Amino acid sequence: MKKLIIVSAVALALGGAMLWPTQEATGQISYQTQPINSGEIRKTVAATGTLAAVDDVVVGAQLSGQITDIYVDFNDTVSADQLLAKIDPRTFQARLDQSQAQVAKTQADLRLQRIAIERAQINADQALRELHRAEALVAEKHISEDELDQYQTRVALTALEHQQAEAQLLALQATLQSNEANRDQAQIELDRTEIRAPIDGFVINRTIEAGQTVAASLNTPELFTLAKDLAQMEIEAYIDESDIGQIALDQRVEFNVDAFPDRQFQGKVQQIRRAPQSNSGVVSYTVIISANNRAGQLLPGMTANLELQIDTLRDTQRVPNAAIRLADRQPKPEESGRGGRGGQFELLDLTAEQRQAMRAASPQRARGEAGGDPRVSDRNREQSRQRMEQLLDTILTDEQKALKAQLDNGTIRPGHLLIMQDEQPELIAVQFGISDGDYTAVLSPDLTGLEVVTQMRSSL
Image: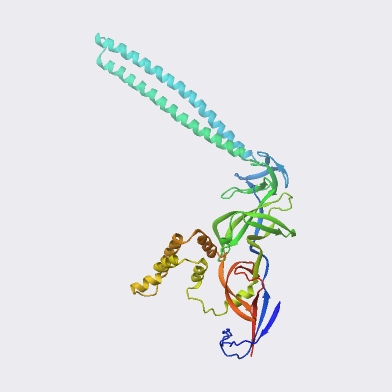
């Protein structure tokens, strides 16, 4: 660190701002400087999260009842369909027996109904034969027409009785199907009294004891938690809305846990969930991070202290952030009043044709030609911005578009620094890169061998 005391022809304004040496000297200004060096800058986002198994399954009960038997304990290895616990089956067995009895009764009723159909068919056939004989006797004048009507009526009645028996058979068949469905449902409920493992794995949690009663109503009671494998873990981290735009898939993540504070574990971003989470007015987004756990040191439920690696620059020229804050407070006579957008256009190095196209599409030019009110509504400003973005997409080269994307996302930004030249401070325009909170990368120009002003004090 180097400290220079320079008597400068600089006057101090009332607010303490520095005026340039064209003013009458009334005091001394001391400058604290630091050589511009090279080093590594790592831009990270800090967060916390909770470790969990990748393939863990919560096993619950679909029925209410008393747990009579438990066959596994913590850390036991289980296979798919293995019996884990049992609910008292007696009530469900009784329902199954009742359903089976109803099915058997309906099946017997069906057999009786088929016999009734056969009887009705025989009666109908007999009535039809008698009608034929009566018709022959009427032709020979042996019986009257009234007697013939009786035979015809009997034929019609026996036919109806046969149809009725057939309809009753269909009703019984439907009843049988309903009873069989009730029997199957009773069998399903009886099977559910046996709590079985849905996957191969091991037990990482058990929440019940033998003799405990579980009540399955709106929520399924959780009995066991099974994990398929702990060789691969995942971390559910909550990233603030101000940082989520910097997170991308496959980004490298470093983290540690309280059990091993001196060891760094590695992971990568696997999923970015778009559903927002709001807690006390703070909006965050869930990011899933995968982590290798072949050594088995990480356990479900541990809290992970995360650093998501956004970007890293190695052996890059850098300056302390204090130098940037100092330069930002200095007057900049060369500023054109266009703000940040003007600085971006300067870095894009637009050609004369591109500048002409931008001036033609400028909303200020359109308002001046129309002679209208210079105040523009938020909606008009947004429309103008969108038109300007569309124009840029058509006139910029691929290299300019890539640079503009970096400017938009903050990877590159324009700024200024106070550099000591011939023992005098000189404000120069620079192009900044990423920052780690202490240092910021200077992408251009090359400032090798120069010193940057980090602090300025005045004395009268």
